[in-house]
Amino acid sequence: MNEEYWQAIVECDHAYDGQFWYGVLTTGIFCRPSCKSRVPKKENIRIFANTVEPEKIGLRPCKRCQPHVQHWRPADEELASRVEQLIDACYQEPLTLQEIASRLFVSPYYLQRSFTKLKLCSPTQYLSQKRVEAAKELLSETTGSVTDIAMQVGFRTSAYFAQVFHKVTGQTPTQYRTQMMRELK
Image: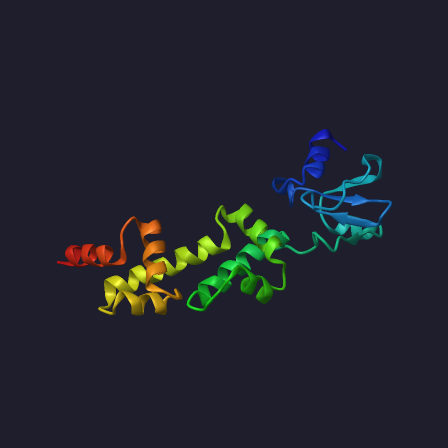
């Protein structure tokens, strides 16, 4: 085995996924280079060009990284995608980190850490951004009151809505609406 492949295995490098697979002869499994399993001893590893070769010699696919599945994504990426989908579909509801975590059957700590690492913002920040984007649409397309719009997009008080809206956009909801009306004229 060459040193480049060994480093890819040690570092769980996603860039090598699909280029090679490795089998661990002592455990009888084969994995992707990005697998987060414990690093095996170098002398117990065999490199394969595809997923058929390791199965021919009796190795089974790893349950963690599922090397035989073509469109596999790491658990963190899958979770982040599911969080985005949940928030996009339910942003009007009173969602909290705890509520999102319970709906996705994960711990709030794991959800927060995984999502923030991949998306560079917390689930709560993503939720606020989604709500503000929806509010911007309503403010520019309807004549509803700021309080009504705040409630429609999931905020519980108009004061908190105004605070979050200002933090995200640099304007109050009323200033934003006034600016949009001027631009339409």
